Amino acid sequence: MSANIVYAILVTSLATFLSRFLGAVSSEGIKETSKLFKWFNCLAYATLAALIARTIIFPVGVLIDASYLSRLAVVILSLIVFFISKKNYVYPTIFSAVCMAILSNYF
Amino acid sequence: MINKEFFLKGYKSILKHDSPAIALGCCFIAIGALLKNLGFNIQESIFSTMLTYALPGSLVMAESLLVGASLLNIFLAVWFVNARLYPMAVSLFPLMMHESQPKWKYYFSCHFIAVSAWLIMKSNYKSIPKEQRIDYWIGIGSATWSIAVIGTFIGFFSSDYLNKDLMMGLAILNPIYFLCMMVGASKTIQISLSVLLGLVLGPIFYFLTPEWSILLGGLVGGTIAYLIGELNVS
Image (cartoon, rainbow over all chains, first blue to last red; front, side):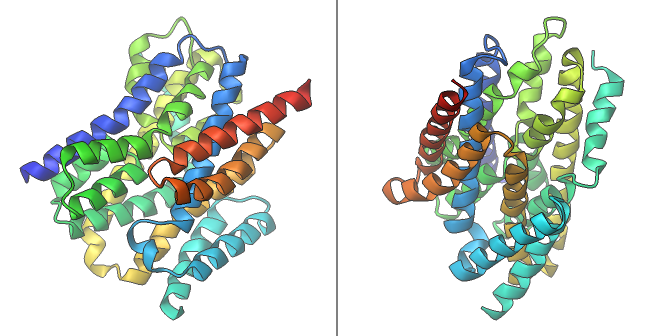
């Protein structure tokens, strides 16, 4: 293994584990009925939503080459499939991959 | 030790019709292919997924390596991106804490905190007795973690057959799956507003500070949603 890559992996896993471990330790004194728990619950959902929006609107990796319009079209169409399929998670997910692959081929 | 019945019940949760197994697997196929293209060998790719087990963090590491960033830069960039795991842990572990369970289970299983496992646990915890929830959680975490490792393995060896269009399809799949799960989980005013405000504020804050946009979007959006929800109740 290349030393640089191994160090990068170790540093990445340490940075990731830190947030998880601190979260586990600091939740010891928090009751699930407390206001603090409710607040953290809101923070978690809002942070995840912000992450999803950023991934779609300002992506990193291969998605950066797909146009805004095609990404927006995939999101809207997938949500329509989600509601039509009575909130099934698998159909819109598979649909999004197929739709993105087709759109990126033409736009 | 770990209760086998609840561990297996958690493990089998990925076999349900609406499980994240397909979405998660496809995303890690993309990661496996990406890591191979970056020059990782199979051991390094698997090692990376096993130890990190967080998609955005792996992407940031890959990007940073590509531009020759220092280890300190990689640490800080990954820490910022994955800091969302902190509120996720704080909003999950109190649901599983039980005095009869040893603390090592909680410290060990915090490694499984990731969006897919977190969302499965959040939608199913009420059907599990509190004492057994940690074993159920370890089952869910082990299952999603296994899928991630298998996905990386497949992605690494199939990278030569994946063209750019297919890679794009695999890359959009994960945010769409999470988006649907978040919309599906929006059953109270607080959660619905949190999701809505996070979706709007995250990109807005990106224009001010790209590094902090996710955390700021989450903090501001989540706090506003919490306060409105509390006002509504009172």
